[in-house]
Image 1 (tube, rainbow, N blue to C red):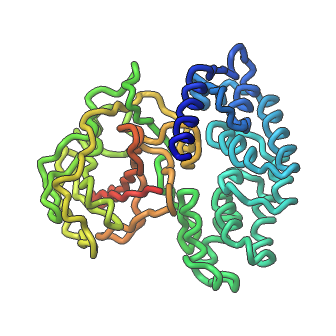
Image 2: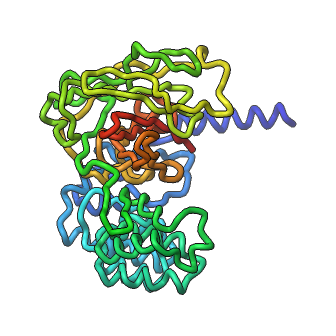
Length: 397
């Protein structure tokens, strides 16, 4: 029987390969709303049919939407959610708020009524009324405190800042259910506040994508994934400059540096096993191992045998995009970038500067699967511009 079954499987596979046909569901479709809906439609597997993916960039389709188109997508997502299909809100509406500035008043009304607080980014720029309602619910919905705090972080108005600042002075009763300080939830949306309500943004509001397909319009004289002269003091391997940024180029003025070059270096291997690998840098292109590095309990003993990242394979685009384009790991976009908000694969981690203890600012991320097929994980780089220290961390699923 095993031999017979093996033969039958082979015949079946041969039949499928000979008779499978490709179907392009996007052929002839020009309505951007229909393109987005077709991209997200759920299809049952059909052995004899291969549905072709959308050939363009979905984020570019979102740029062509009108306000009426936005309303159509929001209405569609709500109607699907009413039938129990929340994934349309989680996908389409998330893309709307990442790629555009949509009017979500109707969506927020529905989500509050149904107690839906995920994805938290959907509450970005929500009204003061929505913010007050979420604050009120903190004391009424103990099972939802975590999601409520994450959602509040994205609203980021004066009322929210005041509330987060007050928790630094006095912890609310419901905070005993949390694993971290309630004020730290603001880091979900990339900001922190002091007890006197002074806000500090933890990312740059301008963003340049880093692409592997060498775009026509790219920033010149920018190095990527080059070998450093400095070495890792844990494994002895040469450090890798994830990026060499020509800060004399006006396109990088938003970073606030004065000088010629900034190199963001790390150890490709050891940074994956530490909470944050610190590197001293200057604006002349020099990097050095930081005295603040603390060797983790475990490091692999085969660092010299590990496959290295391919060198000089990335280009920095000269066209800015929204800082929210890659703020969620499930968005249909590229994730390697300078500036903008990070896409956390696990929990948000903004390291403290080991010298001044201030919270370090996110400056760049490099996605492994955009460097080479079948790789995974993301390198994150944060900096303290005052102390000229960079921190590299790594996350993967």
